[in-house]
Length: 193
Image 1 (cartoon, rainbow, N blue to C red):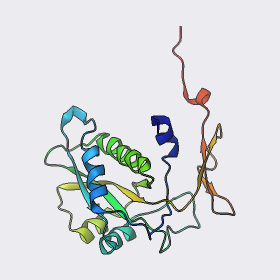
Image 2: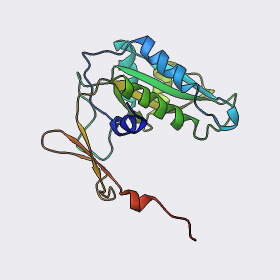
Image 3: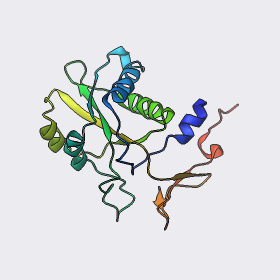
């Protein structure tokens, strides 16, 4: 699989096949890969917490918000929920600002998942106080992002050259998830001569 294949197959999946669990070793492998990514000033302030056991997944799930543009959808139903999570935490004793380290690490985790036939969604809309309490996360660890993972149970179609301004994404009558992507000519700016 080429990098282009990985990027184009890596979508924000929000429905999963819960009958196909992710094991701890897979999540540890993803974290090990993510820790090798670039870090601003090489401070490496990221810490990772993983959940893969059903009881732990149930402690994470209620504190996440899913797909704001799908206003009539409350999130994945039972049987379609993620089977693993990687929480990205910023250790404030190392650095007060994480900058972009979390985004680089989260994308790396998703690309690794895609390579293995898995999928996921980077979630930034989190009830951080409730999640901190549920998982007993120490105060010096800032909750940055959660990467929800599993075997995708939905189809996502890209619409190249379509403007997302009015409708960032949608589902059709069959439940297929559609994602518009701006044209290359719109996003590529040329230097003046």
